[in-house]
Length: 85
Image: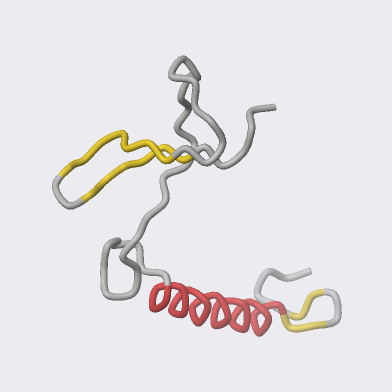
């Protein structure tokens, strides 16, 4: 099989590659428009931080909403949304 020949396995791999590339670029343009990464902005005024672990020495109860930190216009709260199991 010659590397210059793009017709492998009964279809044109170069054409498939171009189709996939075009699809990826359109999808990325959509994501950039509706879910921009420079938060806060005109589209999204909120951000969620996940994965921070707190120990339970302050005895939180379900549905507690405890302020943790304020930095300029940003506020960070701890929300106990379910019982620790």
